[in-house]
Length: 327
Image (cartoon, rainbow, N blue to C red):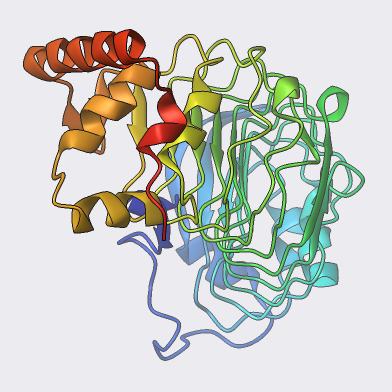
């Protein structure tokens, strides 16, 4: 499973071997090799007891056709770190009980698989995918989809074809917009490390709770919708927001509690003016429901100071744009 270090950088987990390790198997997987790599005994369909997990990662494999032909009862297959093409991976789409498929670090150029009704988790990180959408990924039970570190520039997910998807990771790709993600049950969306300049179609994500947009190209915050009733965490770290008043566009998010805005141009300007932590009070004036700003809990003192500053602003007749600092 992917881990997010420093709020969004995908790294291999500890149980993944380095791709530089000496391969132990040849290019075509054999029955004997599969037997040696089976794990976890449990009940499976017509078998009273069966091995449910198969890990053949980092074996220099180009052919895994033996898995569906002789071990179709397996529920969890990890073929990461091999040399599988998209065609070679498709042999696994015939496995009726497969729930988890990990195929990171291969030679995949397409995510296309026929609908797999039992599949709940699919990870295709670190391949050469350029497109992601329900025309190629349409598994009705899928809950968790990871497509980090690819070349994806276009996405087109339709809610009715992925009705159970709750987590989508598309970090470190080539996206320029959030458009194309229309999965109504989605709760967590990770888009760090793209080239995103526009927030679009968020109104389609009514159940979204976490939105991760670190390391993108956002200069404004147009596009957020009051239909995102459950959105409570947004990471905007290291974007191109030059005006602190842009944060007022998040006021439509009634349940927003955590906001990360470090390393944006407006914050560097404030620091140069020796305002220090004053920006937190300004943010609280705009978004008084926040409970955490940049990893730190909002203090009662900060909230009181924000209220006083807001009262002063109203009495003196100036607005939030007056806090924007010129270059």
